Length: 384
Image (cartoon, rainbow, N blue to C red; front, top):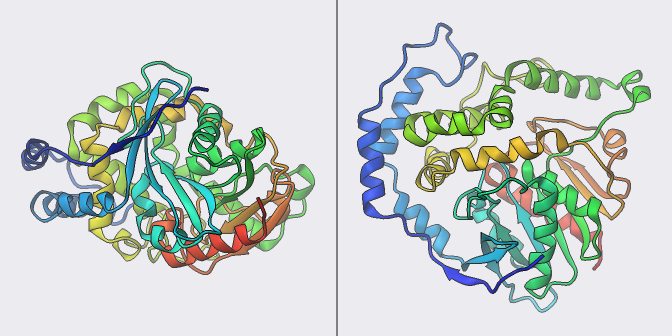
């Protein structure tokens, strides 16, 4: 796989794009109010209006840009496609290389708060997935999880890191796991904060109370929360027309996940298998952070291009096994809750396992200190 020479990049959204966003928000045609008193039908109308108005009048994209541009950014051509990355070389002479991969509806913004802590021990490479953020949009099919994993391995080697570690959650977990599965000789170990595996029939017949609660959580996800994934898996192009044209639509599409997948005050899993009813997303993430992410998707027009990863790979999550060392951190409001024995059906050499007291799917944003500590602890059990 051919990798080009990195070119410096600066995030810079034109003033006209910001003005266009505000004008579109002012012209939003809203649907009627939901017929329930909670989030069970999606983002409540009153909160959607409140958040859209704050986005239009208060949100400071330039502050987000400044936070991004505080770190060195590059574009590098990998297999014919421009990949955006943050690349932070540590001052620590003993630092080890680490590639961090985000998911949907995430971005490199997820990792901004953990860069200072992690760069003390690691040389960090933080790419935007193909079709996400400032990365190029593939014009041909083929950029599956497995292809991205191979591309990330080639990228790390091209940067002068013949041996490295890999970390990820959501799609980042799928890519990171695929790197481990492929085991091309460069990756020395992985860490994931979304653990996906297939329990054996014997395990299903002898589940512990904790595993039963985890299964109920997954049942909630399958029954109430897979509509987005089915749309993105089957018709990403059709979905893209609406989200590319309506910032309010793009906002609601993403913010719903900041509610459903975070540790934002929902009822405990023991009492409520899912949690579309209680909680509020701003108990887990500030509205500025949520709208930073929404803005990045909006300004880069990434709705359809990001969704195509589902078209390529959504059924790919639980296939294959990883033989190289793996670290697993289980945050309590992650979508999928695997026990260690379940995880070991896929990750055959778990060198680190921990179950955290707080946090959810967007662990690096929700709990940056815990997340950074977990990454360090996991890779402390591995060597290059």
